[in-house]
Image (cartoon, rainbow, N blue to C red; front, top):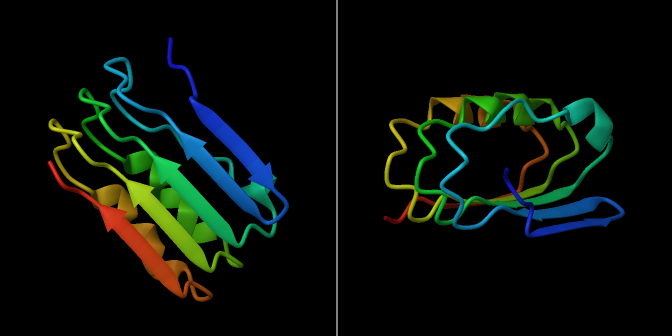
Length: 103
């Protein structure tokens, strides 16, 4: 199975790392309702070599209070598209976006 390497809820901030997993092929829907008034989110899927899409991230657009988003997709060699990021346009409070797609 997939092991979450780090999960740190810090009030209005969450940091999640899933690193170097060949078991991750897609990202399922993120339960945005459970994240409430989250202001800062740091997601890392660095080295998830089998990841082919990020469609499950479409729900991030529902995080109306989100001000800062870091998304690390470094070395996700089989990522076919990033269509799942289209919901980011709905983040009206977003002030900072760092997206790492380097292979």
